[in-house]
Length: 79
Image (cartoon, rainbow, N blue to C red; front, top):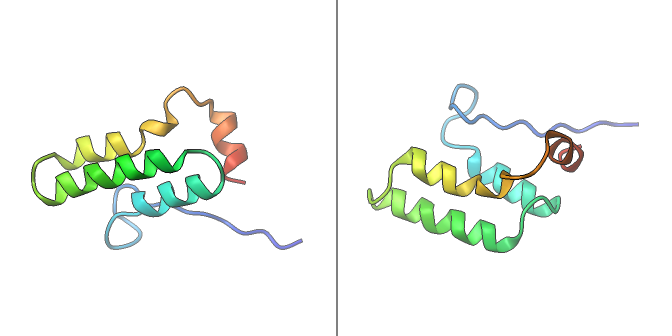
């Protein structure tokens, strides 16, 4: 059986740019978050791009869908 891996580089040490968008899209495809969470994340990314919000706040909003989920729920969705 062939295994696949999903790797996300939140601190920018492995790939250039920000992989948080890739992670959020992956999470939506796996049923971990709703599409409305993606739209909210996109809105905050736009605010960051316009320098109306810090990167930290933008990322916190993008990952808000993880709040209340257990480590097991997240791990199962990412398998």
